[in-house]
Image 1 (cartoon, one colour):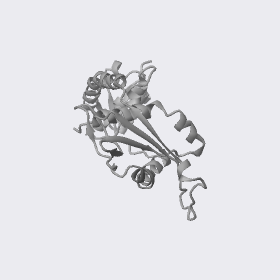
Image 2 (cartoon, rainbow, N blue to C red):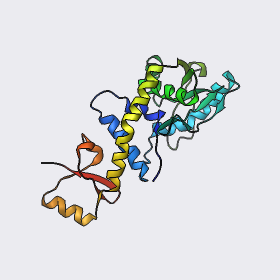
Image 3 (cartoon, rainbow, N blue to C red):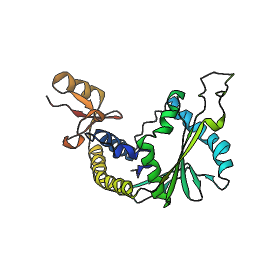
Image 4 (cartoon, rainbow, N blue to C red):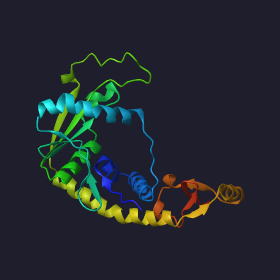
Length: 242
């Protein structure tokens, strides 16, 4: 078993309004990771952010804040959750975002997505800081095989923005309450996954040919009303009721 924690990077999913499907999906991901199953899928936008956040630190943050350090390490809040601030400035967290598309840069800096606000607040919870920062750094993506890559013909001063947020106790309380609410649900899913009925491909095929319709767990509207999980190879399923 692997210990998994609710993290700042996805806490917005736990706080999402609506049917609870988004929070359930995040909870399932953590439960699967707890038993050693992790989706390694990475998009071009994710790779772009991973590569360029270090450049943002060296080119912009370090000159502006000489005492800043690149951190990107785990900082627990309690035994259920924590965060990994990209940068620490005298103990205050700064998280770097590198927009993949130039057409939504101003939209993001003028109206930062709520999930980013939650992320910085959770980083403040880890660091016990009263102030946290969110940075947007716009840089041109590189295309595969591109040999003559050139940066946007825009001043670096116009391609970045650093926003400052103050500690929001109401959000902090909300985060802790949601984590406490979903932690036992994650434990329940872990138990259900470990007790899943194992099937080989032939059995899986024959059962569907006769009377059963299997669906992947991630597609269930409510995982907590399902009596039994099934596993075939490295995927988990439930039986769709007719």
